[in-house]
Image (cartoon, rainbow, N blue to C red):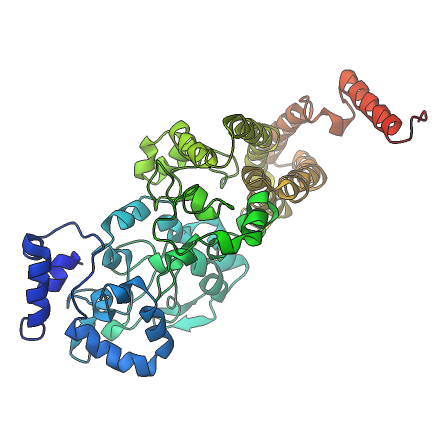
Length: 500
């Protein structure tokens, strides 16, 4: 794909002489030399797009109306400017005398939006399609699914659970059939990390839904809620519980969402949205399409890590951006509405919560689960009860807890979060470990006996730590006294002064 300046002037002169001349006058040298594309308006609708419009306004009136409400329409950017393809492109097809592609990829958008596309390509969003080989996708492909969904690109079948579940948020690998048609198992798909035939990763219309491509829509929290909701990452529900969400939905008419500039504290101040904190402009920061550059913890893994560490695993530019710098960027957003002591103290609370989860449950849980693997009845993932127990502790409950505290949702931090982590750690995970130890020690298999003894030693070590001693009846005497004193004071306070 080429920059828009090249694309415009390379239209055949016989078909588009007026556009070529207008582009040359508008763009000057840029109309001849390759240039880094930036969003511009064209002097007129091209003849090619006019042909598309004359047909599609009848066959697809909704698409036509959406485009007519867009900035693309006002800038004379039509169907062909986005869907034009080279004859050698893997998804190119001939359509009424024009070479086009159904799929519009980030490379296509980069013709005009080069900075935004480059930032997006550096983000975790664009890498969402890499879930295809992950443990999560193993669930959808094997545990939940089968191979009954047959398509031209998947003659051996593919899991419908993966196609209609995982791939619709994370993005599928779009398969191209003869003549530029797209395989029905992989299209339609607007997953944020879609793997495109031109080698690009991502889908801009995951957030800027076609064909209006509205910035206002991308700024609305419901847009993020297409993917960021549910048991393992309920950011939408967390936001709605938080003061931020309460203020937004009470004041949505004051949010000025369709303003071009949209600077927090200047164009709106009633509430922040997801975009406000993670992407949008402030008085000192420009808009960014790398949604990780303002977060100081990555709470996706079993153990929370710093974001530069996860960026390094994907070799993203963010590997060189320390979490302290990212936190400073987020704090600058916060300071548009909150005082510095308020912001500083929030981060003290946040760090303390993450550290508690990491040290009390995540680190020992990871160690214990690793030692338990040789003792499982089956080596296959999710074929054993303990596989499900540990997965849900960190992947569902642990994430909910950490995301809850990061976004001011106490119910998700506690009842849907750390309470569930503790409940299942103590009532499912540990008993399952103890059962594996007992079976291993009496198995008569030397390797399993040794593995069971190693696991037993580690479990004893964990349970005898000060933060787990209560479970085995060894709560510290001083802690017991503190708890009793607190209970007595509570009863005294709320019983009208009567002795308990």
